Length: 213
Length: 258
Ligand SMILES: Cc1cc2nc3c(=O)[nH]c(=O)nc-3n(C[C@H](O)[C@H](O)[C@H](O)COP(=O)(O)OP(=O)(O)OC[C@H]3O[C@@H](n4cnc5c(N)ncnc54)[C@H](O)[C@@H]3O)c2cc1C
Image 1 (tube, rainbow over the protein chains, first blue to last red):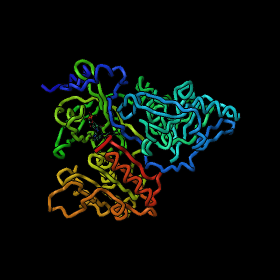
Image 2 (tube, rainbow over the protein chains, first blue to last red):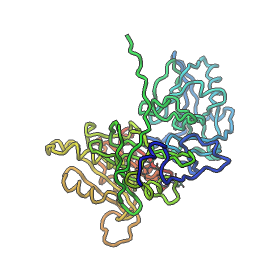
Image 3 (cartoon, each protein chain N blue to C red):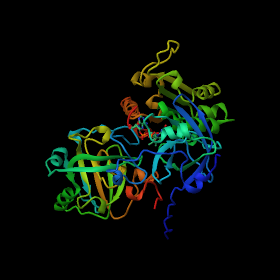
Image 4 (cartoon, helix red, strand yellow):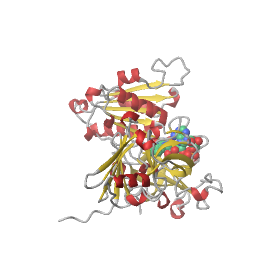
């Protein structure tokens, strides 16, 4: 009998599924699957960013800002980070090895120049993309500006020369081709968020789209 | 006075019923679904599908909507990846009367409507045709009964890369759309065709192909590129190098490789 009792019980008739390995199941947020590839998600062409012209700016609501060149950023204390990453398109990649500069370091350097944080941040990229995050998700050892992955310079299609890295949120929050972190008094939806994606994006609460939870 | 901000509502999970599971090519099939309460969609959007096993194990995948907003029944076209967890289930196992849990429509960026105007340039690789087909189906439905002048305001061209002639998804329907519409062009290129009867393009999409077939940057086409990542990367960056405005080149990628 073909029936619709799948609807009542929620079980997909005949679906067995491929279980994640026992050791890794607890690392997969709801609805995700593990991949060993490194897929790409972006909404348009990959911008070409020249290192000579690269800069990173932190700016505050009063309009003050601090800005660093590529060499200046590379000369800052670096950290090695090994984290699982989770893309809203459903793949997760375990133990991805990154290198970069902690946002805490940048915030401290900016403070020396009179640039102060605010409760929200709009991350802006070369190419014009933006994504918004609460400041709390970027500080206290939770986020970095990463320029190296798996021991190699970050490729342009993965966000090189440098991307924001916020591994505990869905990966679109880890803005590729980063060039500015703008501290703001109010939360303002970025490019992805205006287009239907969640304001916070916690994979463990499956906050994929506008209105989730 | 400020109005209270609208609290966005979650995109609800719904149980769809399979009306039909029909073959498109050897490796792809189209599911036609009845989705009670479906709120409607725009061409280019996708749904998330969620499968649940007996023991409660669940997994999700995204699938583009193939059908036009104007048509009844939601269509998904799925390519079977042999070692895949979800696509073989959808392609081989699901049949008429089965239930499929999904939510949508999702995505507000990779969308096009005739109201956005033309010219429209679409570049597809393999199953990347799916959301672009929704755009062409929408265009045909929206322009049904339109005057020649109205059609000329939204001319469209599709450049579609497939491995072989037999792997072209929607081949007959694309030919039928072209036959009834002088403002639509469809160009196929076949990257692995061994047959000698194919006299058309036989290589991956490249600069000279785009120079010939994509509109010139001066005509400011709306561009949508969908397919495997390497194809999308190559086509989008070639278009930008050729002078197209990066902000008008929208991309969607289905998977890591291909
Ligand atoms: C927005 C969006 C829209 C999509 N629309 C469609 C659609 O309309 N039709 C469609 O068929 N698919 C579509 N996909 C892809 C789909 O979501 C699944 O990724 C695909 O069906 C594979 O799932 P699986 O469980 O069968 O394979 P998995 O078990 O996830 O993967 C099996 C193997 O195949 C590889 N793989 C995964 N995806 C691909 C791919 N696309 N090409 C080549 N190798 C791959 C994996 O790395 C792995 O090695 C879309 C994806 C996104 C993000």
